[in-house]
Each structure stands twice: as structure tokens, then as C-alpha cells.
Amino acid sequence: MTSTHTATATREPAAPAGTHAAAPLLPSILLVGSGKMGGAMLEGWLAQGLAPSVIVDRHRDSLPAPHRIVRAIADIPADFTPDVIVLAVKPQKADPALQDLAKRFPAATLLSVMAGRSIASLKAVYGGEKGLVVVRAMPNTPCLLGAGMSGLYAPPEATPEQKRHCESLLRAVGETVWVDAEGLIDSVTGVSGSGPAYVFLLAELLTKAGVEQGLPEETARILARETIYGAGRMLHTLPTDAAELRRNVTSPGGTTAAALAVLMADDAWPAATSAAVAAAVTRAKELSG
Ligand SMILES: NC(=O)C1=CN([C@@H]2O[C@H](COP(=O)(O)OP(=O)(O)OC[C@H]3O[C@@H](n4cnc5c(N)ncnc54)[C@H](OP(=O)(O)O)[C@@H]3O)[C@@H](O)[C@H]2O)C=CC1
Ligand SMILES: O=C(O)[C@@H]1CCC=N1
Image (cartoon, rainbow, N blue to C red; front, side):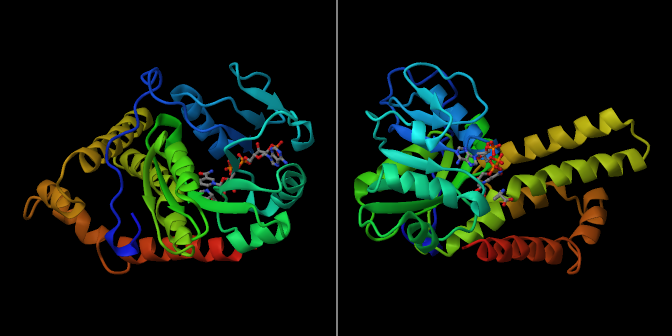
């Protein structure tokens, strides 16, 4: 999609691991940073089938052939040129990696999943080479299960092939949506990049509230977890929108109406959610570099 206001995410779930034996391989990657986010994407990519790739990883000991692990960018085999360099290190710690990458791959397609860091700041550190094209993406950790949600932005100089390569990687681990202004990646970060944490917090709080109402903690944990899972599946699967699904639970004068009168008060969830997402977006802009 190319318009901010007409966003339509792909809706089909990524195929589960092991079902893509006949599918074309994903582009070859050089992955720098395989922690929580990079590692989650890597698991999905390995399951789907990657063209021979190299991972720079200081901890992992092995990777299935034909992929290779090296400990540092300087150790990348001389015969290797990736289709896409995926950078998934902390935004504040990216500069040494960028400088090392620039020496080895002066022209490259760089897919940055780093929160905040602007294309201009990355290119400034990478150096003045004309061949670097940076595509930004904001995935989230459900990529680990093929249930990720990623926003992408490509600058005008990105070629269709570069955009296709980047999108194919993120489509392999979930749904994707393109935005047409770089700054909107910060908005994506506030909603879906950080979003899983908001949902996990809801699970924690619902569990605590259940305990306060007399339930054993483990019972409350299961109730909270499975309710969020079931509601998430309904949202994902059914064509019905969230407000309608909410109304379907809410009997007039019933229990849900009593709870929602608390949650939907102007100074409760509406204000807290807007303020929380705005805080995330502000922080992303502070990290822009
Ligand atoms: N976590 C999330 O939910 C999301 C994170 N992101 C973005 O992903 C990026 C990574 O975040 P996250 O995965 O949470 O962080 P982690 O700290 O879990 O992962 C970062 C990894 O990068 C490694 N690393 C740092 N420098 C280098 C280097 N020069 N060469 C190789 N590896 C290196 C670190 O290794 P070591 O431990 O040895 O330092 C670590 O394993 C961030 O920019 C973040 O904004 C985006 C969307 C969601
Ligand atoms: O918290 C962060 O900065 C990263 C980006 C989105 C999710 N985690």
C-alpha cells in the first residue's frame, strides 16, 4: 500500500514452519543483531527457507547449513554478498556496526528495524556512498510465531526489487503494511512495535484483578491468557470490527457494561492509551539520531 490513509494489511497468516518446502527461497541476508527481535525474525526465516545467508552473532554456536555464523562483521566471508543487510541492534549502539558494514559493503540494501533511527542518520554514519539504500521496518516480536505485524517505509530511490526483497522477509513472519512517510514508522512503533507489551501488561493486570476477586493465581493467569488469545483470534479472523465485537459482549445493564463504564471513562483507557502511544512515538523521535 502506498497511502497512509488507505492502509490495508495483508490478512493471510504466514504459513507455519515446515510448510514451504516448494516455495521460493527468501532473499539472502546478512543479519546483524539476533537478539529478541532479530532472533524472532531469524527463526521464521530459517523455517521458511532462506537463500544462503550469514549471521553476525556473538552467542549462537550453530546454524543449519548452508548458513554461516561469524562473530564480527570483519569475519564475513569474502565470497558473500547478501541481497539484504538486516540491522537489528539497539538504535543507540548501531554506529560501530554501520561503520564496519560500510567498509565491507559500500553499496547495499539495508533493512533497518531499529526504533527511531532515521534514514538520514544511518546514511550519515554509513558514509557518503551513493549505493546505500535504507528501507525502514518496524516489526514486532510475534514474528517468532509467524504472527508478526510490520510497517515498512522505503525512500523514493528504493527499487521495486529492493522493496520486494524487504517485504518478502517481513511477510514470511507475519503481516505487512507500507506507509508513505518515514515519520509514520514512529507511529507504527507506538501502536504495533511496542504494542505486544501493552497486551502482555493487560494479561498481567487482568490476572492481578482476578486474584483480588478470590481466584487462585494460576486460574486467573489462564483465564486472562486465553481470553486475550480468543479475542485476538476473533479480531484477526472475523470480518467484524472491534467495536462491534465489544458490543456483542456487552448486555444492556449487564456485567460488561458495568466494567466498561470504568474503562471507557474519558480519563481512563482512552486517555491512557493515547498518552502511552504518544510517549512511545516521542521516544522514537528522540532516538532518531
Ligand atoms: N524487542 C522488540 O519488541 C522490538 C525491537 N525492535 C528493534 O530491534 C532492535 C533490537 O532490539 P532487541 O532485539 O529487543 O534487542 P536485543 O538487545 O535483544 O538484541 C540486540 C542484539 O544485537 C547484538 N549486537 C549488538 N551489536 C552487534 C554487532 N556489532 N554485531 C553483532 N551483533 C550485535 C547484541 O549482542 P550482544 O548481546 O552481544 O551485545 C544483541 O544480541 C532495536 O533497534 C529495537 O528498536 C523493533 C521492533 C520490536
Ligand atoms: O522498546 C523499544 O524501543 C523497541 C521498539 C519497539 C519495541 N521494542
